[in-house]
Length: 208
Image 1 (cartoon, rainbow, N blue to C red):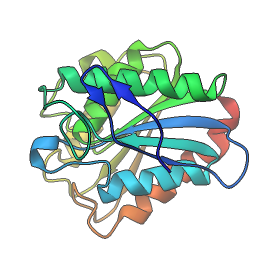
Image 2: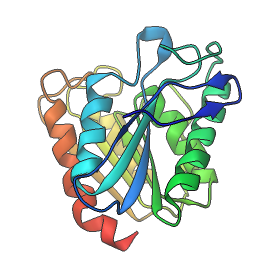
Image 3: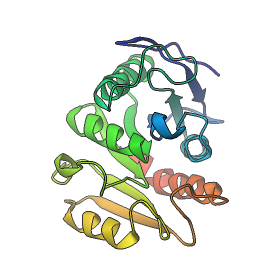
């Protein structure tokens, strides 16, 4: 279903996936890099939404400015961060006092983790294949919020050893899930991303 969302550059196209039962929390999910074809319809983003819904969370995904039916134009991550902040605001308005999770895939992980780490309403951060060698994730390292990373062991953009070094820098609480045999696109492995999120938040959601 759609969800009314307006960002600083105008209307943002959305999809909202709801759990079968009561809403225990809400996850806002950011998509991969728009310049390289990333949208909220990316398979991994879709499966992430399904995973959150399976864990009892409303899952809000949206297209950044200039993507699909969203108004505006690509803004090098600056405007996209503002879009994500607007999505967090809307999610909080719709579901408060439910806990909010900031999540993203690839470029979207960089946006979501930075914005989520700054927002006191955000209870946890989720990064799927975060491109830690391409963007600056340093402000995430000391965040006191729970940090969940889902990595592909054959990620050609961020090798697993690079991901493990980054993970080692993170303060607790933290958790790393590695999907064996997966590349950066998780080609054919989207269901494993879904299952990882459902597993991580099935129990953890009760503690948020």
